Length: 119
Length: 114
Image (tube, rainbow over all chains, first blue to last red; front, side, top):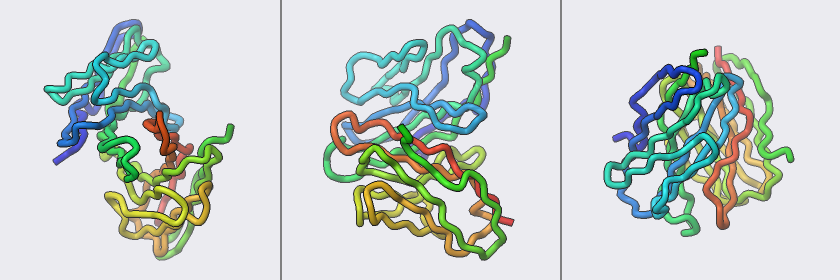
C-alpha cells in the first residue's frame, strides 16, 4: 500500500487564485511528520512547510498553509494568491517514528503533483 | 554555505560500466541518504546512513553500494550499470537533534545508462 498518495498528477490555477494540492497518508505510528517540497523545472528540491502529528494548529509559511486533518489522514497544501513562479512539481512526504529515538526515521515521498499557473 | 554538494551533475554510462556519485555535506548532519527520482514514481530511498560507519538499505537498494567513512561524505557506487538505473539521483541529509525534521537536498545528478 502507498504510504503517501497524491491523486492529482497535474493541476492548473489562474494567477492570483488559491489552489489546494491533495495528499493522503497511511501510517500506524502516533508520532510522524508531514512535509511539502517544491521542485521547479531547474530540478532542486525546496522545503516548503512541515506539520508534526502532535501539532494542534495547521502550519503556515507565508502563502503556504498545510490543511492537516488527522482523522482523515490528509495533509493538503494550500497556496494562496498563486504566482507564475509557483509553477513546479510539488511533493508530499512523511517521516515516521519518534524524532530522537535513535533509529532512522525514513522519509517517504508521494508521486508528486505538477502545478501550472496560468497568467 | 555549501549545504549538500553532489558530483557529477550529469553522467552517461554504458551498460556494465561502474561509477561513483559523490555526496558531501558541511552541516555536520548525522543522517545522509540517497534517493532516485523517476517519472511518475516520486523519490524512492536507495540507501541511508545514521552516522559514520553505519549504513542500511532503503526501498530500492539492488545494484547500488554505499559506505560512510566520514560524517561529511556518503558516496553511491554503481558496480555494473544497467539501463534501469537511468534516473536522477538526489543525496539528502539532516541533523539528528531537535528540529531534525527537514531533509536538505543536493542539486541532483542525472545519470543515463545506454
